[in-house]
Image (cartoon, rainbow, N blue to C red; front, top):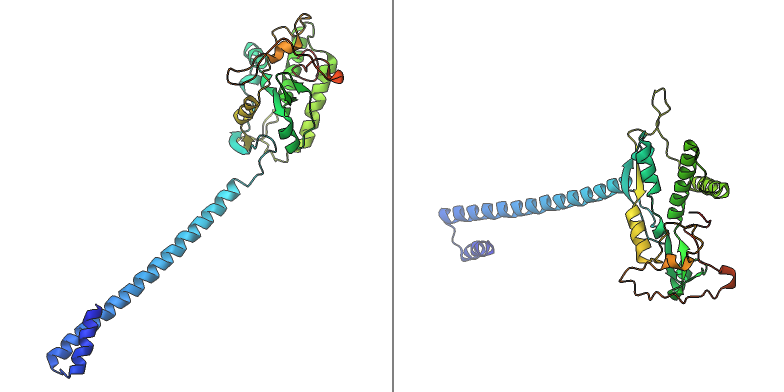
Length: 282
């Protein structure tokens, strides 16, 4: 197009003033003007489209942020609320099938609660030094709080189930009351402010059709297994001959720990290794 303009200028300078020449020149100028106008229009359209795309991306990001508000990961396992679940009235754990209920509650396993964390890791996360882990003296034994609460629920259910059936209690009242108090304090600590909508029913029902954001228990389980303390509760924890050390001999093949029978605690105030929780009769 620039060569056409140049030819117009050169012919003008050479004095070629015929009607045909002027007509050709006018056509060329009009063609150039249309090209230039169309080019500018295309640029304006592209610019506006770019602005529109940017605004849409920003608005979408703001919308998603309102749906999934930013949350600081948990201090230890770096967990966020990534799972949504509805509020429900009945689950298999509270069904009318008492046989199924018992099976589910009694089968809750909290062995993963017991973890071994290095002293360096504990110091970095503001934890105090704990009782020594038998197979690595640079690590301490800790119990993950979520598992402890789940364990407490299991203890309370077993006690209530035994009372309902009129059979002797296998858990002490001290242990049960400790668990009730632990859950009371947890509820107060969480101070959940979710308003649960009520329904016009004879039985008080609330929260139907509402959802809540939850963390992933599988992620907590993965964190526990990553820091396994090789712990497994014996079938009969009341067996007097059973060594507490045996509970820590269930290391996975890739743990790198060397399990022996020769471990002796060097801490006078911590004689004996911890049970499944802070009390006997887990």
